Structures are given as structure tokens and as C-alpha cells.
Image (cartoon, rainbow, N blue to C red):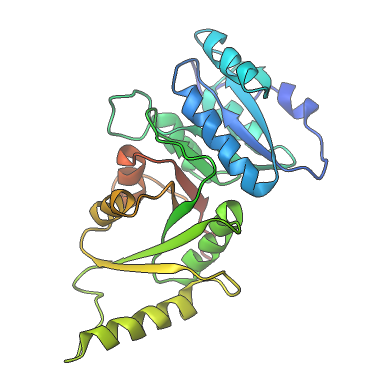
Length: 272
């Protein structure tokens, strides 16, 4: 299936501008469509959104259509390039979130080409779902990876808006390496507590409900993936740079390829 085709306006002409937000589930024609749709439904609950399914036809639509119909979700079929079609669908009025598969094959440990292509300047946040994901419904605990920057704070605010709720716990993870680790005196417990308090005040968005802060030292990708298992989280949220070219955004690529739970990518603001 070529990704160079022009977007089919079919879904665009049927989209409306009603107040009800939309979570769009991109279903392929495989069993991986099930976890994608379940993730979309779980996230839609927190947004008060409607779930719609879209399938870009390539090798038929029987599996994708039957999964959507079994869930009682509206199903749209489009033709053309996968990336172009999904980008056009996600740009429609009312769409708050696009949910799709993270990897092209169940046994792969690398992010799929469609997921990576859409992560390049996405029109909306993306939720990328492993083919064998453990999908919690409702989503209770969200792990947000946060770097020490105002841009990441803005991304965190948008991520929390998508996943936050009265019954959800937000865990903010910040990983230092030896170069960025704050100096420690002869009372490390007090230094760590002070650092955590200052970090939350400076980099977490104002008005955020109480969060749990996890401070770790080491390789960011490894520490994040270990935290997913150790903290039993249901979703990982990451600020995503506008370029995922090789050699850049290594953490994003590594987490998409290895996370056992869905990964929410929130586009970072463009630098002036």
C-alpha cells in the first residue's frame, strides 16, 4: 500500500463540528486491532469522547470491520496511502486523539513505520498500542516521563488533560544521569526531598492535582521501561519532538518499541 496517495476526502465530508470530541481508532486488518480499539475506548471515557474507527483498506477489511461492529463503534473505510489517510482523518474537526498500532508485527521490538511517520509533526496526540498490549479499562495509573524544561511542562499539561480523572493517579518520572544529578550533602534524604519539591513547582503545570514524583538515575529508556513494570502503570505519556530521525528521540523510539502498555505521544511545541 502506497503512502504517497492523496487523502480520500470521504471521512472529511462526513465529519462534523459538534461539541462531542472524538477519539479515532485506526484499525488494521489483524488481531492487533482489538487492543487499539480497547485503548481508544478507555481513553475516550476520560475525555467524554465518542470513539470512531477508521481503516485504510489494503488486504481487506473483514477483521477490522468485525472488531468495530462487535464493539458498537462506527466504522469508516478509506483508500490510499496509510499515513496520508490517517493524518487527514486525525486533522478533522473534533478529533482529540488518534490511536493506532505501535509496531508492524507482534514479534517486533521496533516502532512501526506508520507510527513513526505519524509521530513526525502529528496533528493531534497519538496513542500507540503494542499488538499484545495489556489494556486497562478504566485507565488508573499513568506514568508521565518529564524532562526539566518548560516545553515538557506544556506537554505534560496536555497529556494530563487527556488521561487525568478523579480516579486516576499520575506518576511523574524524571531520570537524571550523573551529569545532571544535583549535588548531595551529608543529608541526602533532605536534599532529595527539596529537589523533588522544587522540580514539581518549576516543571509540573500549575493547578495539577497531586502527583507522585519518581526520581531515578541512569539510562532514560531503561529506567522508564523498568518503571512501567515496577509501578504497574496502565499508560506511558511522553513529550514527543517534531523529528524522530535516526539519532534523535532515542527514548521515544525505544519506548514505542518495547513498552508493554500503550504510549501516549504529545507533540512538543516548536522552538521559536
